[in-house]
Image (cartoon, rainbow, N blue to C red; front, side, top):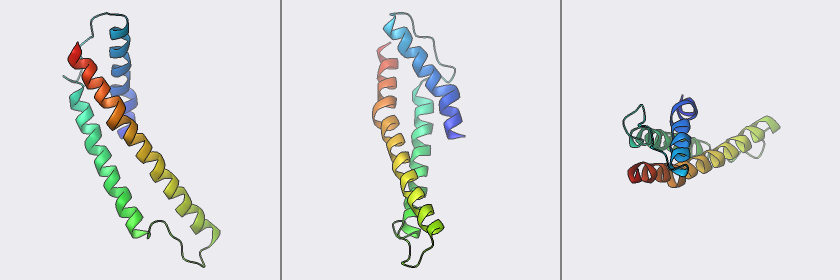
Length: 109
């Protein structure tokens, strides 16, 4: 659901807003009042995902398999660690680059 909200609603609006700013055209008002509204929701969901990842990392002893773990077990933990790294990168890019830029763009226009 999170990715669908981003891909279908928030990101297309940000793209349209940026295109309008570049072309020096009026920015159409968003269907959700202010870009801050969905951004706040996304950041809250990012926080929830981060909490879930921390719990998963803690429950798995930092994705450390027992010495006698089978290949499937090792593969699962390796995939979970990669997923966590990818999700942290996703969250960083949105929370620290994309969202502040979109809010600043909206406020400037």
